[in-house]
Length: 452
Image (cartoon, rainbow, N blue to C red):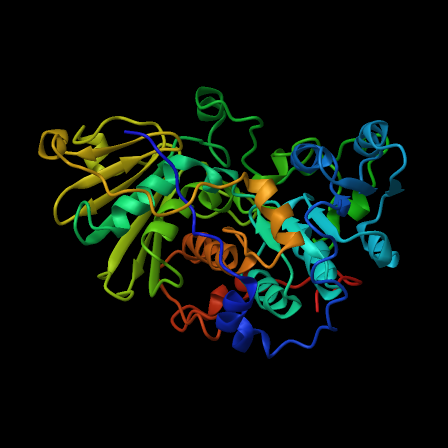
């Protein structure tokens, strides 16, 4: 079996009714643009972060829209992007992009994770439509700020969870929500990528792109054309070293990234988050090697406890990365897929990866007739956002949905870093039993940097 999943587009007016209350506490200015163009007109798009994922995101919209602004702290990336779009304004400091707000209608943010929020909030304050790479933010507090700012701005938003637009996820969500395997009280998600702090021999064995067990004491020459101080942005001042840059080396360092948990978690936890209608966990407990003050682990796991949601029962969701796998996997009780999501229901199990799924035990479902699809196919992840910019439709990975997903993923790291099971007070963004988590939930920025 193999298919796909996504919420049917709903009018933005109805969506905003559910989030207006949360947005009432913010004091951003009124949006300058709600729908800048008709369906047949082109949007003017500013691209912040033009290399790597930024180049890919830019390419996904350049065929139908106007790329009018290019921004990157790496002049090499900027020059390569300018070859494709020679008429676009070229800027190194993303803060200066917003000096000319009348030049663009929408913004694509593909900087490193620790500066996502700064570019995104600035765009939302001006009423610009925003597409932001995953994970949406570097911290839980930033995710909450963005989710509420987006609700107030009333613009089209989308986080880069491209697989969400695929048909397979849609069909899995339909099966879970229609009760094919009965009520789900347990779910597991695992990814085989083992990047992060680990011994050199393990880094070689698991194909890590760089190996380090501690913060380097020496420095390396800054690559020509890279504004390192601007790249650091709100993060603490550090001497440049080749183990930090280029990406995605940086994603294993807590100051700039959140490791595999929030990176691949954005893609893989998306499936149970969507299918099981999850939002804020009650508790989170993580395990792995002793937490390092600077480096995210290559392998770890985190278990989330969620309460009942509507007619869905309480559920435990466990995330595994690297060498960690569910017991049912290690005991060969299910197919040995390298990365997957497993739903365990009262009537059976459903195993899925990006492109396929299977109902288990297979003999029990040999005569099963799946429900007719009720989640419409996507026009494409980026195309969905572009269409929403020009209409009153809401994207499937808008900042309301992806903001909650990002908060939950970050909570796995919070539990791991504080080294104990945490209780989560979502309304007040705090762990009542772990006040030491506060600096991780909301960190201090370098002097000269302020989000709101």
